[in-house]
View 1 (cartoon, rainbow, N blue to C red):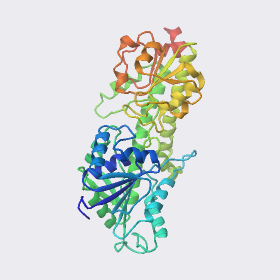
View 2: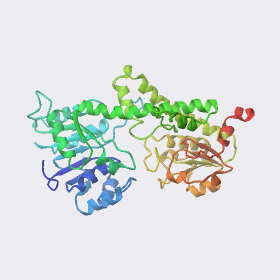
View 3: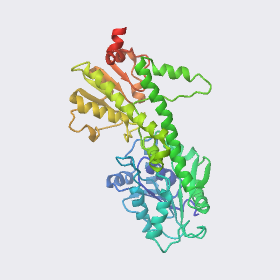
View 4: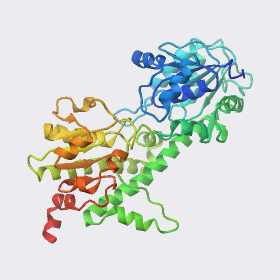
Length: 436
């Protein structure tokens, strides 16, 4: 493969994974073109700015753009390596949609040449990399593609799958330090992709088949989803029994072989809340546990909506502060966010009584259009809101001391305010008030 200074890379998709990946590759000296269908994203990146919130990303993008190693466009161009990092959503029936992946592959096909490498990073159902291979073979019959009609060792191009496994807020660090699983259509494809990742990855790079790599990514997130579902189900039981679930988990985790995760208002993000459905769709008769975990975590969000609505109903006219919309702390990513779902449901029901506090948003998402809810800052919420529904454990919210929460009805779905008097439980559970 060419030296870093001579290598041309195209990254398809400049979202939460694509843009950091493009910037990290550009930092090695390679010439990187980021392709995105949204013109405003292209304009933002070409000006050296970013459209997403991620630690240190703004400085990195500014630097590589100014040095001329990263630029953006809406159209693909010839390159040596093509990295596909586009969304893979699912439909209303939880069937995976790989349309964006196939659209990206179609665009790449027009500029492919012998010697090129195509790497799919988008989380995908098992078999998607092979579908990309078959599409390229159809669109470019002049090129020999790997894994068709023989061993593939004489192929003109290499095709591989290498999923990201990064944590928002630590993406730039983990893109470099985390181990990578690289699955090739053939062993030669895997080795060629391995050579590319070794340019910027310090973690171990392990090669396997494309199908194994695809299932590995889905397995990682399904594992996490099942474990979160256990914690969320425990919280439902504890709520019914009037027990502090946070204390129970803390005590149970003192067992040397127990490590229960923390419950929350559900599960969000474009990985854990989505990827398990890809496994369910692939083998619906063999995945009752994975399906149930998804249903438990989605059901926890419904439970929180009901809890919060009961509290608000019990305090007619009280103003409500919904604290947070992101799917996890200290980021601006609202994809599949249970916090957003809770807050928008409450806004639809209680209208202008609901105020939203989200330090990583300048405007409210479209889900709040027509509800009368408005965006306020944290200090205004402390001063004006009688009810506080804590949905995201942002550091800003953790900093609110008890003295500023006294006298308020609080529903803490993240367990970050253990010193809060149990007013909310009594307000939501009249039978407990009578028992006391």
